[in-house]
Length: 214
Image (tube, rainbow, N blue to C red; front, side, top):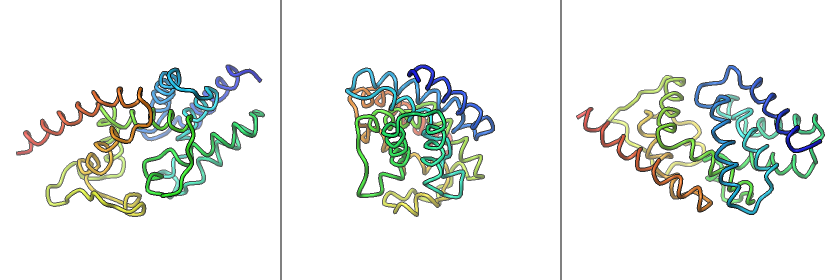
């Protein structure tokens, strides 16, 4: 099967699977990550098919919406890719990327690394910062019924993985516990360059936010 046909089938599968997804993890999030991943990949020595498939499938079954199950995403992606006869090595690589792409995966000392993971991870992190990242943070916070801001609850800067996964803190805390950290966690030069303006926008937003609440 040709590259283009594989991608078209995958797009159709993802759109159908995520048609009722929470607004920050829906098809349009996937589309933005896919677009940024293709852009970053042009500047990296990597396999484009693996990059595109991982970008398209990275949130096909996010553990946040499946009782914390971190294997359902890789398993769902693998099952689909096998159903359309994608090469086993590519399928396994995509599953590994999905398993290790998230911020919470960075809490694990032993991990998987590849140029393709670096590209897709940067693309996903870019969608977590800037104006879009702010919108997504508050969308998810509202979805979970969290406070926007509570000055009595301070950000936790040294959480364990389990503490991070189970936090119910206000959304503003999430800026300090994750979003503002992402600029310095970019893997590629292109990702780092793209992150700078988005990071600055978040800092400006927080300055405005605190000016208004005070």
